[in-house]
Image (tube, rainbow, N blue to C red; front, side, top):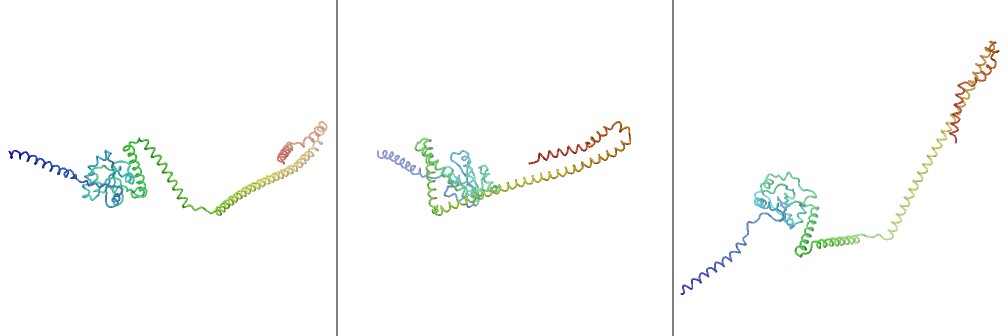
Length: 349
């Protein structure tokens, strides 16, 4: 009887002990981590580590399918980092928007190589073999480095990091309003618009106060004196302009007078020349008349010698004598004189 009762009791005790051991060993096995990752997460607080030594960085997002496809290759590359003498890191752009702005990441995944603070963009595939060859063969030397304002350590990129961090905080706040609190999206947008206006007004007020603090107003005497000086300078400039205009007018008048005098002198010279020509022509006309008269006188005796002509045509000889002074040459000369006199009369005052 006693033996039969002790058997079931022993079995229950054994089962209870096994259950207790399983309960105590289960959490220990659950706590044991899987294989530790060799990829070092980079944040805004420790990103300056990449300024020393040789690094490879990967920018990713948890929702990015392409980033997820390269995770295993990146882990394999990190495991071989000791043999390659390189450190491997990764940056979550959702959690660290400031770093994505500092490196100006616009596509995912994005890879960067850093050697003693000099950064280069790696644009090859995220496969272990390509990454390994990129380091062993030093292909990064043929890539143009990010220098000047493009360098992540520059002041410009620091300002870009601040803007990206602010935008990330706004995005997280928007998600808190819409997802956690259940506020409609348009209400969140209205809130941000009002907040932006208020922030702008506040910044403007601060700038006005700062300018008032550093601006020293001039005394009234100095201000009045400066105004008087300005007025006197303006009056002086106006007088100079008036003098210049008067000088221009005087010079124009003198030029007009000189031109008129020159025209009158030219007219007088022309008149003198015309008068001289008329006198010469008048002098030439009597000479021609004398020659014609002498010719007529020479022909007279011949006519007296011929008795038939004197008796038959005495009147015709007289008519010839009266008509001969009006020869063609004399008529042309008289016409020229008349034309010149008419021209002089038209040119007159």
